[in-house]
Image 1 (cartoon, rainbow, N blue to C red):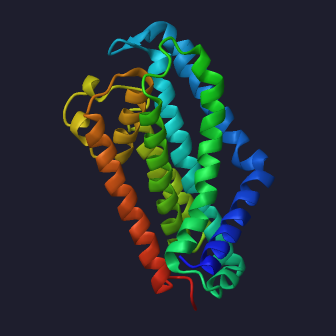
Image 2: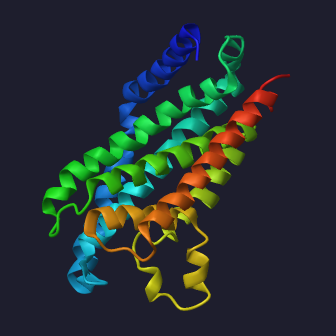
Length: 256
């Protein structure tokens, strides 16, 4: 990367970061409140009845999945919305006229989604973790799992931002693809508790592996090998990033 390219990437990334922070009441506060509502309902009300899942207190069982769900939804929402608006309002042409390479553009746009997801998840974790009955088993695994979550869905957000030419299409992916993936990814239950074919189908959801890895880092409990979960999601992250870069390089739906 040349010095000029590095400065350009940093400048575009800074614009995305400023956008996230300046609109914090829309970008950070809502997912934090949503996560706390889930914790109150599932960890509090239902937790007193369910108590333990696979030997793990239910509140501790749910928290890692909520953090993954928060990072995933916010990384996707930020990048898909930012790029969609840039295309829809025409100012993406200013970015395309810069000397930045396609991968630098994707990295810069992805940075806003990563910040938004991580910031919301960090606030939830900072407040909820002290109430955990077990504490954190392996912080490094948690960090890697949340990093991969952000990369997967930041890339998916860029792809959706390029594909969607109306708000309806944008909402379709967010509501009928991302949200169901989060809800059936084992956030609130163990895949072992499901009968077939649902247990097997759950394992086709990439979020299942992210949730399982994050849960292993928090509680020590996991259903799949941690290395396998991280390897699967690293492959998905690489695929989404490569696809996003390839589409930007082609100018797909970016150039008239």
